[in-house]
Length: 127
Image (cartoon, rainbow, N blue to C red):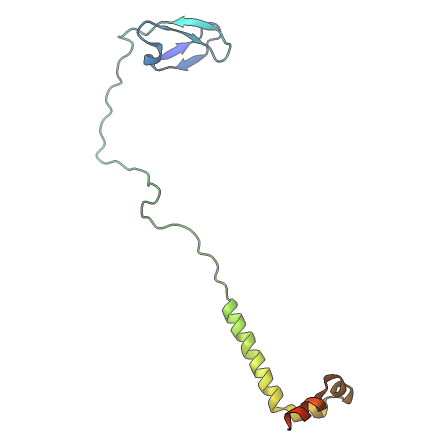
């Protein structure tokens, strides 16, 4: 039911049950004018004609309806691969240093030998 303010002309959609069978005093939200609204005649309140029933109905999907999610997967981290490469490089360097320790000591300056205490370490392992 349409209710129109006689003061400012604002129109409102109101449930006819809210007006009641005897009428009701209503107030305009725009201009605050109050008036007595009578119920609409029964002839004016006619049910809308029934809509035709379609052959099939397409409904929107509901949440968690079992459809796959369309999300991008998180990028894969390669920390394990990088750590294994770094560990392998350290192992190779240690093996090379042990294999060529004589050549490395021959090239190493004497000041470095004193700073690194190489002669002291060598005497510890010869006992």
